[in-house]
Amino acid sequence: MTSTLLPGDVIWRNGRIATLNPAIDTPYGLLEHHDLLVRDGAIVAVTPALTHPHCQVIDLQGRLVTPGLIDCHTHLVYGGNRAKEWEQRLNGVSYQHISAQGGGINATVNATRGTSAQRLQQQAQPRLTALMAEGVTTIEVKSGYGLNLDGEEKMLRVARQLAAENPIEVTTTLLAAHATPPEYKGDPDGYIDYVCETILPTLCQQHLVDAVDVFCESVGFTLAQTERVFAAAQALGIPVKGHVEQLSHLGGAALVGQYKGLSADHIEYLDEQGVLALQRAGTVAVLLPGAFYFLRETQRPPVDLLRKYHVPMAVATDINPGTSPFASLHLAMNMACVQFGLTPEEAWAGVTRHAARALGRQHTHGQLAAGFVADFIVWDAENPVEMVYEPCRNPLFSRVYRGAAHYPQGQS
Ligand code: NIG
Ligand code: FE
Image (cartoon, rainbow, N blue to C red; front, side, top):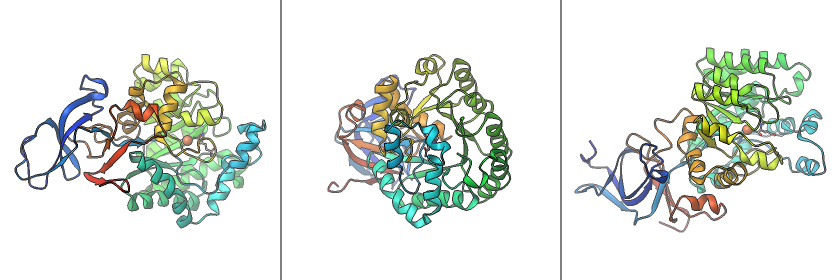
């Protein structure tokens, strides 16, 4: 199979291929002087020196190659910004207090409801462009700032439209249970009824929902409310994930595990029982160091326990206007190392193969191996640690999505 070349195949010759394949026993799964054989947007082989009578050959000239990066937790689509609120917070007002006063998530809900789909897309595009320029080839985008049928649908359609207009794969997550909207103030259970009976089934039917998420927190929804949403999603065959144990410990991660969820995200307050629940379920722990930094949190996620029980750790930007206004996955990797003590290799696994698992795409995305998509990045760098160590210098040489190369302006 590997050496049977077909016309139309492309050989990417002589790379230093950081495969991120855990079966390869070198740091980053690195293979020196290897070729990537690409056919129809997928990798057919990673092998030394292929012969190439009829194929196109692209010389990598010994450059470093990694899988395309995967940002598995974002709120990329939103209206407005919350700069004034941030200033308030620096003047001593807490996130919880601002949220109780109708600010926080609901401030962005107002702004998002009042912005047209076209405008939301225009505003999201530069954030997406910044992530793509760093080598992101797959991104998850959540709803959660509409909080009614029209608003949630609008956000998810914008996410799908961004996918249609950019060389990037977008997965969509319904986060209708992000906060109780003003119409349901004082009646979160009534809102959860509306989510389970109307928003979720309607948007699933329109094929807009790849996964379902809930903000399980004192300023979000209780464990019982979260479970109702998870049960409704499960009944529709949609996988779940959760914003859990971010500001306090409610047991949301164990609940995600119980539902064999894709990922438990934030998890600063996760305890050993919760870690064990993730291990048993094969659920990914998604670390969001941007939100930790921006909220000036002090409670760190239990990285040693996650390592001890071999729970895969992903790293994502969580880009959103309230708690993580950064469109940089390189910076998120750096923060995961500096703030949470990940190694650079763990940070890389966190934005490739473990992030793929958090999106249910671990068999096709996040590694460079036969059978995986041909999404990869060619770098002007010696070692993958450089992108983590120096997050504001971007040594991306070219970005390859489904086998097609995109060069930053000025290169070719
Ligand atoms: O991931 N934790 C809840 N949701 C977002 C924050 C959203 C917001 O403040 O607008 C987060 O941090
Ligand atoms: Fe989030």
